[in-house]
Amino acid sequence: LAGVSFAVLGIARSACAFSAASLGPGKFAAAHKLDARLEVLGGVRRSPAGATDVEVEDVSSGALPWIRALKEALSPPASPLRTWLDVVVRARMAAVLGEGAGG
Image (cartoon, rainbow, N blue to C red; front, side, top):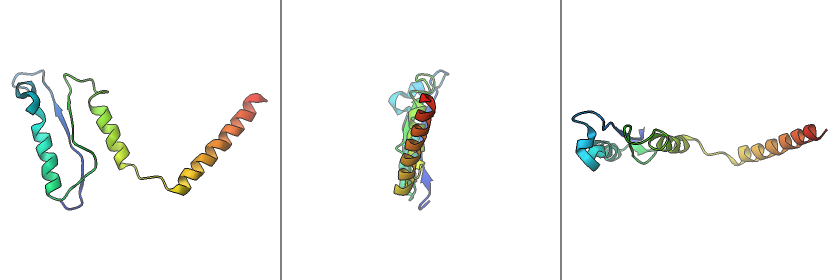
């Protein structure tokens, strides 16, 4: 797995019988073991391992922050030229929209 990118999100569902709830804090152990093993095998972790219980946490507070962090980690860095162009274009658009709004 040398060079293979990975990210692990452990998802538990505590509402059913024989559920993750009976495992307590260890309910995400398999996800953390998988994360560690992938790294040992040469994988490149793109985001820290995450964990969420879909029966206890709302998706917006459990999974979404991890997904957003992963998206950010996977986004290529902006080049200085791109950053400069974005600033110039936004400033020009603001000027044009400001002129149009006042006149």
